[in-house]
Length: 242
Image (cartoon, rainbow, N blue to C red):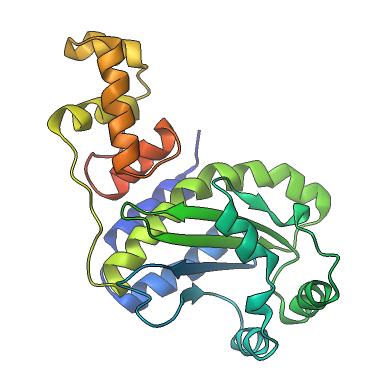
């Protein structure tokens, strides 16, 4: 089961209504999870990126300037891997053999970026794309022990951060429309019910439940049932379980 900090962070992300509060909350997320930094990066989002990419981050300003001055943006393997993946990317698997990439990761340590990292791809309801990266200075052993917790929690938190950024920085929400039956199925799924359970509870065929869930997944641009439920909650289409 997830701990209290996860629920607390989700509640705070849902409550944020002002730009400054949203950015401050990134610092809170970093602190609560014992991380070094967190960075949200968006592209192809009209509300946020009419002329350039959008960032919300906790990195030192000096590192941001150095990153831009060295044009690390053009070679950063984190951005490339995140854009090509549907699943979280562990920085340990990135190809760092190129001299410029070695330079980037080496110099990052001088600015306390964190030498371990995970990047979570975000796919929005209207085709927008974004990334959330979290970093840590854990040892290899500590990282292997805690990485699964980060993957579990931040696949959900990343989407809540995305919706919060859209709401506070972009001036709106990209909210899809679900049918009453789709919402009903999602409510039961959020309580841990199987497709078979849901079919019995609302009096329809199991295959029909699967159809409703698949339609919801596509509308919410989610990867699986858990992701679909998380996105539905973030849009306040359904209430959190319990």
